[in-house]
Length: 293
Length: 293
Image 1: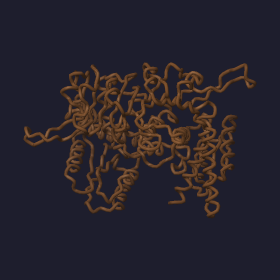
Image 2: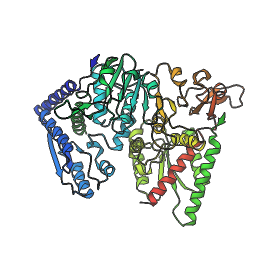
Image 3: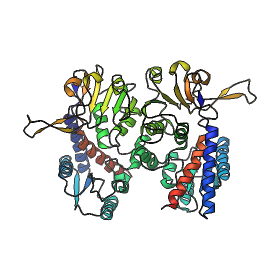
């Protein structure tokens, strides 16, 4: 069993990005500049955005954090987005989710210039991705593809089962892995809450991607020997034996399933650490595309 | 075995559209107006566009055919598209494919205003469709959903196998049937040229959608009893016994497979006739959306 080590792989990717940025600096070129809009004071959101800003610093990007109060109106937010859309200094930006309830999230995501949409959440980018055109792949799916590719996991002609049809993981993974291209050409089955006899389907899978958010959902008796497991879940489960009072669990019963796996992502330290690295990678891609216009 | 009769169903839909248009006329409202751009003199394209224009007349739509010579430059075509994008009289329009080789098809499709893109080929519409947002569903997939829905074919919790990952049929069908919504909630497996042991997969399918373009590809021994078959293929196969010298064949060996099927689309007369009806339906939707702005 080989661990798909997201911590190590994400550090490798950040290192590669830092080298690319050094080259830009040496050649006197503009370096990538990522902006993040944060509306409100949600603690988790503050932490996420903070990590993104620090990651920018680490690889040599410029970064801008636009903090707006909880009381920001939808119109004010849309105006700020428009400023970033048209600001040539900014190569890419994100709007940290969730937004306060009085703001229409869909309207906000639609307002982001697709060429600067480094989260890959704009429908135009999603459509381009599905139609094999250049786009921004959302960070989590992009990170999973990178893990599979860098560990040389064979996907071509393999049976892949994706569990969960979310817009940010399950749906894009089912598309990407069945396309031509790296970590692609797989025969993908997308399963969800209406799927019957899930175990029979997962037992036939060479590769399983689980993105449900249900701790330890996938058990050992649901998989075959030699399976490749990508676990996207991250849940806090009460655990009195831990100082902080909880344990972090994935969607996979790791102890059982890892014994039968050829490759498996740990939780934490698997898919999670990849997302910020891929956000940086998308920002680098945005800069390179703008430079080549 | 029940035939999924596309000829009858498409006539029903056209009839419903005609009634809706009559209502618009009675209320003194603008009726839907579809425009089609045809570049060059390709015989098949002329036939297709002609059928679309006649279908518009039949349901009471206004229609405009913009014919441009083979020598039209990409810029001239883009200018014409821009005219239609901004012309308030036009509710929706299509650019008939294929285009002459000196014109970049992707660039042209990207230039169509997504709100008037009644073919549903713009990536923004494809992305909206994949993300469960209002969009235009491309005519062939939309027609298949309508056939399944109107014949009350149960899809929820069923195993669906889609054969072929084309942008205009296989890929969108795999998305639509696995979504919530009419003819959805199915567990979908998308197969393609790299799929191994296809027969083993199709034999487990409750519903099979074949869109390969290989005459009589799907044989009787590849399906289980009671299967639902949607055959998207239309090929001309040389046949000396026919006056015109060829027979029209689908991707399914109809005589063998129909014996085991609960529902099956004939070829011709199944999926084919649905496409123009759904193009009209999309144009009606475009008009209604514009009226509600």
